[in-house]
Image 1: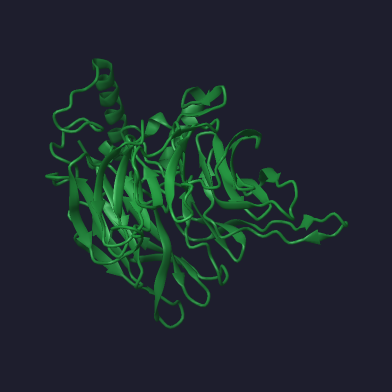
Image 2: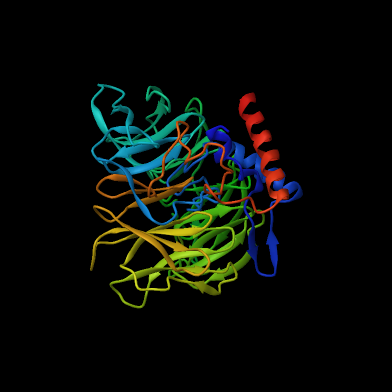
Length: 456
């Protein structure tokens, strides 16, 4: 079975998010839309951008993660922000160049510098890369920052956009054949294959009580893309714009612009978008903008198929923890034992993976069972992980170096899979298939996915 087929086995299933008394599920027309969007937004089979996918969910439902006991499989002596796609980790290093690293064993596949368009002087890559369409997209630090596109296989330059302004959000998002980036407080949609501008959005000023207007520009947070819509925030507004044209779909505004704001990045998936409004997680219907529910937390990190997770204060001002909420707002999950302060978190199908700060102990990564918050394993790292990702059976963490964490004794095959390459995806060696129906469904999806890959 191909690595591509293994990674894309469950993608067509989509997400299921229960909100209030109803549910948004991947069925009928919604399932067709979910599958179509997966093909255009998450086709890399991994962790395609800063928070995993174009919706910023921090959640990979296809990844089981490593099982205890675990160990560091390899370490790469550079740090930075990264994305994972098709068996390669793409790292925008802190010291400048972009590295492509073989996800199986950590060997360097290629390294390339970003140079200025006029004199060829090397400049630093910044922020998180995004990967799609066999291309790596990354911003560069210059007096006038570039958005640069590299060939994912070779590192060769494909195109650059160097006229977007002096400041970007440094986290491009790729979906529907477009690259979305906020530069100089304007949202640009660029053709993913050529870099050509397709549309841009610069919010109109807001009216004031005295009959005048005031500026309310976009924040530098990564946009979120789902349901044919791109979501962006300013201080006082949440904007939902059509992906293909930038036309307005809906806009939500705070009640009192003097005392209330939007903050943080929007997160969108399968019919909903969540964002911090007035320091409270607010969940909207992605199509209409109607408010579905609120979650009583001032942090928003993961939108999974059944929970919202927040890295939040634990009651001690010097500590933080991760709490899981039902989408209706009820807190139902948190670690069952004391942990070091948590800096970041992502989720796979079975566990939440949290980066632990150095304060009060060694830095590390901990896996927490998604059902009850119990600790499954912990690994020490050289520094507080600034970014985490979970892909297949591996957790990647970037602190002072980039490390890959796997089940102890994991013997990777030539195709990058763990153990027997014919092991049913989502099950470790020695684990039986739950039922004959599940096996038949797996075989059907594998055939369909491999067929789609051959067509491409």
